[in-house]
Amino acid sequence: MCVECGCGAPGQEVGGERRRGVVLPHLHHDHHEGEGHEGSGPGASLPLPEGPEVNRTIRIGQDILEKNNRIARDNRDFFREHGIFVLNFLSAPGSGKTTLLERTISALGTTCPMAVIEGDQETSRDADRIRRLGVQAVQINTGAGCHLDAHQVAHAAGDLELFPGTVLVIENIGNLVCPALFDLGETARVVLFSVTEGEDKPLKYPRIFREADLTLLTKSDLLPHLDFDRTWAESSLRGVNPRGETIALSSRTGEGFGLWLSWLLAHREKAGSLPQARG
Amino acid sequence: MHELSLVVNLLELCEAEASRGGFDRIDRIVLEVGELSGVSLPALRFSFDVAGRGSVIESAVLEIRETPGTGWCLKCEETVRIREPLRECPVCGSLGLLPTGGTEFRLCELVVRDRRTLEKSRKGVG
Picture 1 (cartoon, each protein chain N blue to C red):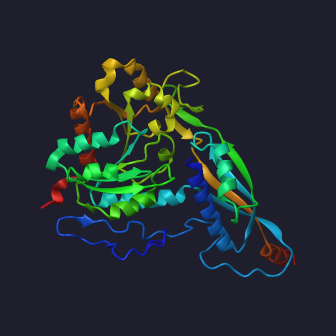
Picture 2: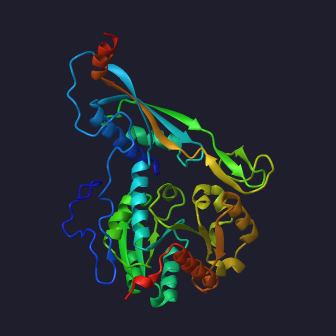
Picture 3: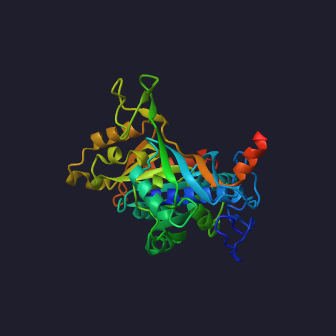
């Protein structure tokens, strides 16, 4: 049973090996609440003796996102151990995340196993688009939620059949603010920045761009029709994220796709997610 | 509006502490919030009021200790004071700063009200 949400999903497989690959277990079974607390052991509350009420101070010093970070660490360990390369796609709505995924899936064909976790407030439209290409996809609907968290990803990954060497893409909720704070256990973060958004986006939303391993400047085929100052945009990107890489591409024309696919495959290899375990 | 999720996480931490520590009322919650943490303080306080209703944190005062943002300038090779948006080093003006401090978002301490403390303090004095 999942200690985070109490779900005892009977169909949930735990740690099962399938013939050609691994089946992700319910990833977050081994957490222990309250790790690292000082002066407070686990156990039931004690009955209070009679007496006047007084104040006392309890020192805690715990990161408020620790619960999310702890599940994210478990996700990351699991993905690493099983040779799964995980990308967290982040961007504003409408920057072309799903279209980029569709073209990437088509370009890689059968050379690289892929799986997708789609995050949206409502509908399964994006997951349906991915499944039409013959790739496994799980849709998470967050309702009022503005970001995905590590717990949701652990559940969604449990519904996918993942093989060593699989590239698992998590398409986060379209939002440049909140998703930046929530580690999902990904291997790398990819931020999409479409040229129709205006070149000052990295300055206006620095947090999300700061933590990108790669920024993709999407819809580059539209550049001739816009007043977008690419040099200025790239310099503002470097300002908030001096170490990240940037690639300009168009999912419509395929421009820049060679660089993107090379980045993807090289980083998958670097992360040790080689498909040697297949067959 | 991720501040609402953050407050829900904070509430879970407080409830776990209350269960362990055997108290049901918190008078003060002290948080450390870094200048570069990406947390909006007005949104945090608003979420705190909304999400805390009817819970162990309902009557608590929220005390926020802000920590300054600092970064490592790749050109100066020094730690400098920075604020968002991260544009340029305030010393040399170059782009290229790596945040080193001010990204914290931490629960530091709780001031709680219960009866057990008095029993303990009596024992201590006696």
